[in-house]
Image (cartoon, rainbow, N blue to C red; front, side, top):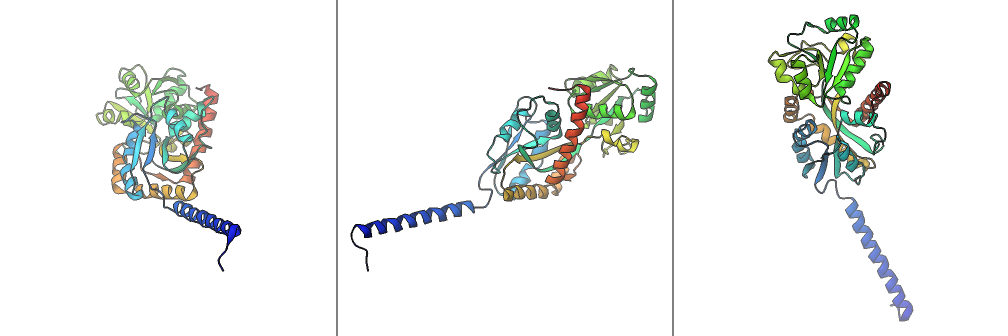
Length: 329
């Protein structure tokens, strides 16, 4: 029997609203079940185009995009070191459409910052890391030191006589050599420069006795015989004879200079898993491996769990050393 009168009209209106809300609920449910990703993903890099982090990201981003089937674009954000990019990423919506590059230098920056505008451990979650580059201890070709042992023996007998140049007081090669000094119990004067070029010039001009530096800037000089490597934190493909820190009892001084991808904290678990799985896939791509190696990187992969452990280990080590040396920003 059909409803009649005002009561019937009210019932019809009620059921109409129920149907309307049900339809909206179904539509919302359908929208929520759409597979990630649906649109362009932005990856923030805190260096200018052509910087190490930028080149590293460009070495694999095309393969990453192909697997996800959406564009993944780099946005270079300048500023104080990598801070500007990290701040933007930390405050981004955690939906998987904003990712960011985090390198080992960002951990060092966070460790020495007196009032950092973000929390590297609370504001970000690791997606994965691929590759790292070593710290080298090098001397000019005419240096009397042919081996690490000769250098350390002289340093122990002659405190404050040697000068070691670095590309800056807050970079990993500087910290690694400070750790080396502690472990080896030697007193070598540190001379931090503003970047690698002035340090290289100083070594070639014999204004410093040695350099602690990454291989990117000096590979050509090493191959040309104008410099000699005495020690490295990681094996060098072109110079396999150079001994490792760990082989000389200096393993604790070898902080790894890695490069990784992170997302803002709060990202849905299924989105994080898809990103992490995709990143792991591209680390096995021969083309990606070749490009990474061309940049002078090793090609080891770290999953999110291992990368989180590595970050904490590096942070603790750098924080303790920075406190002891009075280094802060």
